[in-house]
Amino acid sequence: MSEILDLAGIFVFALTGALMGVRKRLDVVGMAVLASMTALGGGIVRDLILNVRPAAFQSLGYVLVPLAATVIVAFWHPHVARVMPAIMILDAAGLGLFCAVGTEKALEYGLNPLHAALLGVTTAVGGGMLRDLLAGEIPTLLYDRQLYAVPAMVGSAVMAALYVYDLHGWPATLAAAVIAFVLRIAAMRYGWRAPLARGVRPDG
Image (cartoon, rainbow, N blue to C red; front, side, top):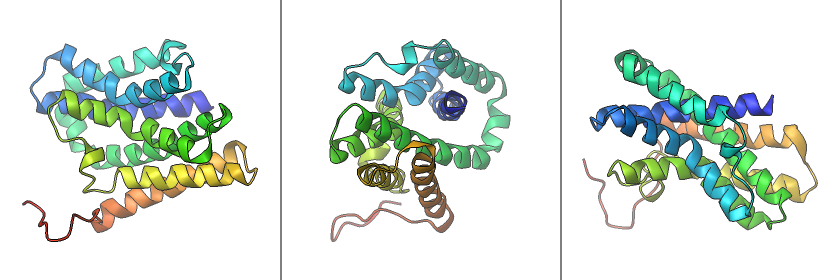
């Protein structure tokens, strides 16, 4: 079940990466690269830091799912773009799942709660940061004007705190993921923004 949820999150992240490729007028190879980096980049960075074989290289599904998302976007991107609101909801769910699972894995490999939470955030937003860098955009992590990284930080912190109090397993993971998901959805619904430095006015 956990692998199915993982692949579902990868698929949604890959859709957003492939759509970025369409907006940047990249060919299908470029779209596939952005899709793969968005979906797998954060987890690969996490596993390399943990000095373990990245999960993306242990199952064929981790490679095929981003490619399938690329094909779907390449042929039907106008239709995919029209259902973007639904994709963003699924993206928020993937964000919550990845930050919780990433934090839990780091804790299981012996990291302290603070470092584990940082790796949880990396798992959730690292792929998007790589996508933005490759596409020539300001990474969301550095310009979190739509509260994307912040929900991941909160979810990772909750996961680490539950682990410290010896609350492990899927209930703790689900609780942390849901908190991050709800915060992200609320930010989209109510237009919450991260603050700028004092005296700096937002552009636009």
